[in-house]
Amino acid sequence: MFCLVDCNSFYASCEQVFRPDLRNKPVVVLSNNDCFIVARSAQAKAMGIGDLQTMFDIKSWMQQQNVTIFSSNYALYGDLSARVMNTLRLFSSRIEIYSIDEMFLYLEEISSPQNSPTQISESMNDYGKHIKKTIFQHTAMPVSVGIAPTKTLAKLANRAAKIIPKCQGVGVLDTSKKWDWVKKRTPVNKIWGISSRFSARLAELNIYTALELANSDPKMIRRYFNVCVERTIEELNGHACLSLEEIPTPKKQIYCSRSFAQKTKQLPPIQDAISLYVARACEKLRAQQSMSASLQILLYTASYESNYYNSHQVIQLPYPSDDTRLISAIARTAVQHLFKPGVAYIKAGVGLLELSDKKHQQLDMFHPGQSTKTDQLMTVIDKINTHYGRNSIYVAAEGVHKKWAMRQAYRSPSYTSQWNELPEIKC
Ligand SMILES: [Mg+2]
Image (cartoon, rainbow, N blue to C red; front, side):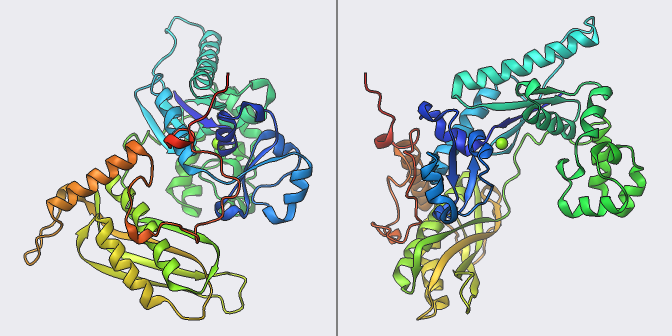
């Protein structure tokens, strides 16, 4: 059986972990630069606060209504996500990390064959409750659990667990009778892998619910759509076509881009920002043991400006590298060429492209490539930053004051990843 564990309102729940006073209260989390609402606790949703609502529009109303507002704190969310995943490893050695707040587990038989179907079903439900309870005990993270014979049905089971109060956060779809009941009540656009574009086309074929899709002819659907939708039909009928992706595939490109706190017409702060983004991207590059052969620089003006434009440039590196210093220096020079005086920029970004496995590098006859000393230095930098907290050591090109850094007026402490932001307990 496949089991999907999904953290409820993940970012908002992370903020409540170290603030028990905010549990069962309205909490929202803002996007980068405090622009939009990207996560809402159940209570905030019940008040009618919409996804991606603009902070500016409802800030004073939220303050009147005692809604607690947070800037996004990805250091905290990443760490809590890792803790949830580690707890899940207690239940299965076969795990797929699907996203920051969703994980699939493969559960071996959890009942003996002599048990009746009702007993098996009950024991699966109990097991789901046990998973939910253990995660809350270990991490204070509320989750929903969906158990079913295929990944697509496990997604439906999880959705049912969330929206049907009687389920109490655990949905088991182990018989065709149960999954037909849920499919009948699920619109096609809520099925995993069916986009809104596909749902509109399915509506033209009079297919509106998951049950109608499951009962349609897979071969006909394949002709109209693709093999993935055909597989979805098989999965909805209990035939597992999708297996667990237990080993994450390394990314082919790594991007880091962010808005500035305010628009700037000056080159130095943009160069400093670019150096920081290069450092972040290179950390990810080294974490997945890759080297980059080229670099993309992006500069943007605000989209509402009449002369809105974005410019970008791709630069070939002299040799494949993961050296923050080398890539940062090249990026700074590139920004200088892209930058136009008098233009107010609001956002910049970098992309590391043409990634390859560090262990299997093609050697260059005319260049020795990255030195062993550089490898050692980068390893030491990563170790220091992992051990003592992010930015304990950084390239001076990033600048010290970072006045351009994005607005994070409501950021919570990084309770678990910065020594100086550890939670305090007063007795
Ligand atoms: Mg979630």
